[in-house]
Amino acid sequence: MHGPDLVSWLLAVLTAASGGYCLSRLRRAPCAPVPAPAVPGTAPGRLHSHEADLAEGLMGFGMAAMAVAGTAVPGEVWAWVYGPPAVLLVLAAARRPDRRAHRLHHAVGALAMTYMALAMTAAPGHNGHHPAAGSPALTGALLAYFGGYALWSGSRLLSVSGGTAAVASAGLPRACRLSMGIGMFAMLLTM
Image (cartoon, rainbow, N blue to C red; front, side, top):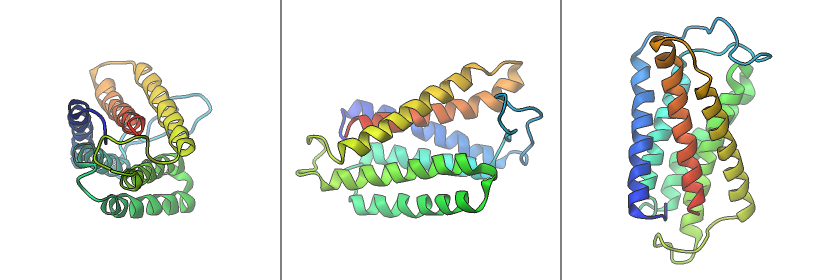
């Protein structure tokens, strides 16, 4: 990331905290179905998905590492870190329709991280303070996607009602997804 150091460190703390929370959820009870769809016309989801928590936890820590050490690590290394999981998530989404949208979202995130890493190293004089890197059209499309995702997940977070248990089981994971969407948007904005 090539923004101010303070922003990089704040983003790293935010995404590492989100990633840590998601990974801590792996120790919890198995998945429990949601009794009714959250949004009319949609299929019921799950309160707790180990696959989603693992993907979001690793993405959070990866975003934190990239925010702090982005240009210090060669882009090819970042591409090998994010590229294979993106391919696996796309293949999993194609084979199993039950969580297709969620898997595709994680694949888009991993591909966006790969794109940012390769764009940073391809830019002339990649010392962290260079002009825009990457394709403006692709960067704009990713900005639109993650900006829309942040707005959508924020609106879902506002719709959480009920007691403390409902907020803890549904609100905190949604807050983590929101913070990672905002983090991805911020990282793309610095390109």
